[in-house]
Amino acid sequence: MRGRDPRSIKAEVRERVWRLLEERGVARFPLPVKGRIPNFAGAEEAAARLRSSDEYQAARVVKVNPDSPQRPVRLMALQDGKLLVMPTPRIRSGFLLLDPSRIPKGMVSQASTISGAFRLGLQVHPRDLPRIDLIVIGSVAVTPSGWRVGKGEGYAELEYGILRSFGKVDGSTPIFTTVHELQLVEDLPREPFDVPVDAIFTERRAIRCPPNPKPEGIYWELLDERKLEEIPLLQEMRRTFYRRELL
Image (cartoon, rainbow, N blue to C red; front, side, top):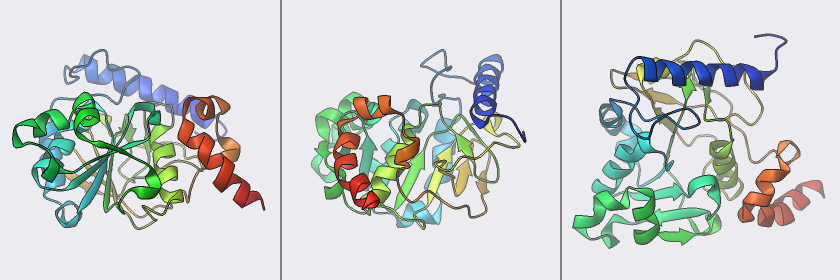
């Protein structure tokens, strides 16, 4: 991989994994999985393995991405009485906070969906979120050493950078991912903004990763201007955090 553009390598890995999941018949709705954090057969089993971890058991507040393969994690967090933080798709509406004590019992499953979370959760500015004890992140591919790629748009990295900027997570906050075994790859290039995971849960096993450095915030100088135009929260943050960093 040395000497090649990291983005092109990551793109090739994504294409290979998306194709493999469909060829092996483990890709699940929504289809096709290309361009998505892919849903997979065994997502519930992977979530159950995550559920048995000490970090999950001890967590009071869990942040989980809004993609389909992590819906079982969102559901079990609410069922287990944990506060759930869910970023809205593309972070366009910021973050949602779901408190299971305020959700009717018959609507907990609905609350774990994107549309249900908007109806049953509260839109909360990141400065007003509780401190997060565990992050669960979606992946297209991940290495046993903890380096991952998403679908290529950088939203997971931005979510992490936002939360870190507001002091809701730090370098010790555990980050987990649930994937199918076919999403495990040998190696991936690393860029400064990449967010590594501390543990991987598949339908077959749990993999503990070695410690890796995590980004300390948003790399404004590397941020695509298009993202700023799309995400009002980033525009607000650049007016405050970025200018403060320049002083």
